[in-house]
Length: 207
Image 1 (cartoon, rainbow, N blue to C red):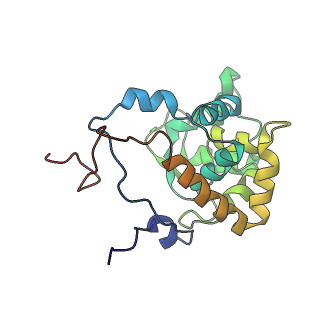
Image 2 (image 1 turned 135 degrees about the vertical axis):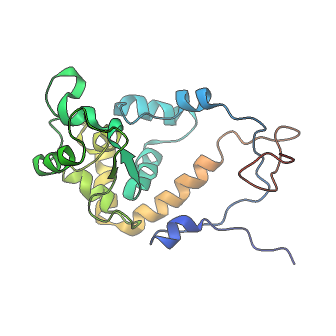
Image 3 (image 1 turned 45 degrees about the vertical axis):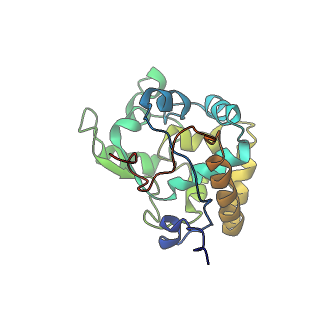
């Protein structure tokens, strides 16, 4: 009898969903950091650019919001958001979409011209749990990264309705997150003789 397909347990162990992962996925034989950096959204990007990058690989607006929900746990370095605290878009002032109390807290963690490698929680409310509080945080203007808060603060964006839906219904978020992770895993899979099926996922076979 074949063993059951593996499940993604990182999210499950922190209170989130799990799902069956497809076996036999081929990995590249080389890494391409420049290619990854050009296609992955930056924490400094606006929603239009972020959505365009998702659309270019066949993902939709619901995928954008659901996958962003992974920021319900984890940390980010000050250098990735300190511009929002002191000089947003060159204005010399903080990002006006940041909750004022949250702004004060972040400025204490990340003082101006301080250590850019200091970490702050992506989710200031339940930092180590996989839940839907990320979306409630956005509603309260407590998104840490610009790319987070723009999901809710971009006037007229279709993402606002999705944020509201996930905030009020954790089950809907979990279901969408699982489907979006599957969708992302199916982006341009290597086939035929391209790449290899690794015996150890973190390194090329034979290395």
